[in-house]
Image (tube, rainbow, N blue to C red; front, side, top):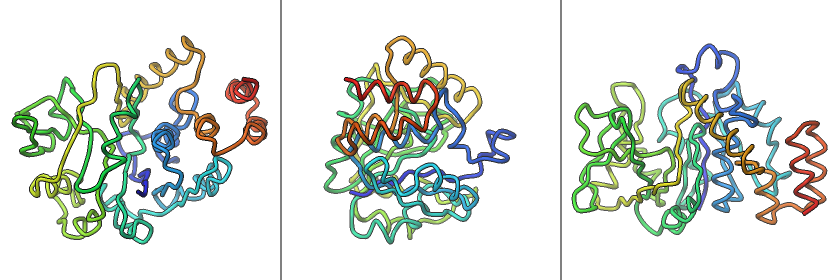
Length: 286
């Protein structure tokens, strides 16, 4: 299975902060936003990641991640020339996806909680169809919402005026090898974009869509607005200060996955003359 991290878009909702920088590089407490979505893929044991960004950001991502070797990974950076919708990511990466299943995560999504990765096993081990998560939200009219009957998906509605449920779909998806073919069949919406909801509906129509509701104790935040960004930063700060460990440190996850050695981590830690570096050094003393 291939993994895609989509970090494109214009970041219009976050201007003026994004006038000179890709939204996914904005600090969320003590790390760039993109570290949190990359960490999800790493914890799912995806060693090869396709990172898709806008043309002006490629050099910056190249500077941060290079080819991913320092993390024991392979990170391929591709360009989405214009923000033509989430499904376009599969078309941009089709050469690398080939005939494989694929996981896609949006770079502005944050997940945290005990047992979260257990809930993704069905997606990671996907044989056929599509798999995604559902999260109970207070204002479903702001999201893509699942309409179901007897635990079976009937439809998916994008920002419905009269939601049929409170189950919103977060930005983390698993698709089978047919995803590229289906994306080629999509027609642009009134927003002049290919819509992820339209792609999901193809799988729903073919009775090939499955989901799992995220249970209590697991948090999902979409960091697409100033308030959400601030909420997420405060949340991460509170947990890290209370529990004395970091959330979503790619270097730590690489060590835990045995993708790098403690000696390699020490070399990385020397680049950080701050508490982040101290934290990495301390990991090597355990």
